[in-house]
Image (cartoon, rainbow, N blue to C red; front, side, top):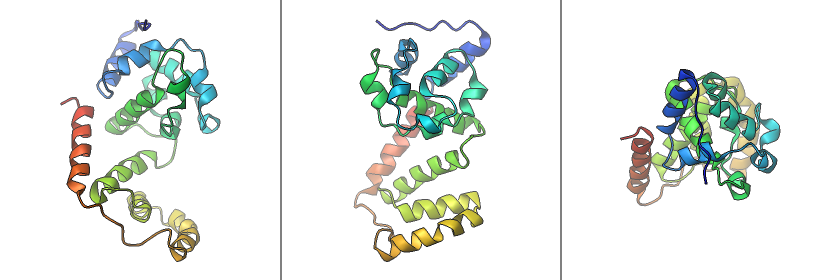
Length: 196
């Protein structure tokens, strides 16, 4: 039986209700199921790089700490491997919570602790939408152009050249035959995220 969170302040209630708009139907269950056992944190392969481990971040969500949560590096470092949900004794889906938090952070223009993370996230979706699959060369090119990161781009140039010479980084991206299906899926996901 899922535990229910009872927000006690207007700030907590507003954050909790706003967050529910960005997730699927199981988000409410995932938010309420956590009893802070720490299994998600112990299972997370990227926890070493996070400013707040998954368990603490979820507690911060439950406490209505919106600004701290949305500016956290944790939401951008989650790789959605689903190790947390596979091991959670209560079935709380942390990757769903992280995705909802990413979407909320982007929509609200929250300043990310991980430099360029929202830009990378949006660029990734745009490249997949355009080509129907990931094109690493287009992803990195568009990402660095959007960030105007000339110095960073030049630092990666030798690595990119090496990959290109080995045929691992084609300049011209491959496109799948029925890209319109991918565009349609991304559009539907966007509508769901917006609550329409």
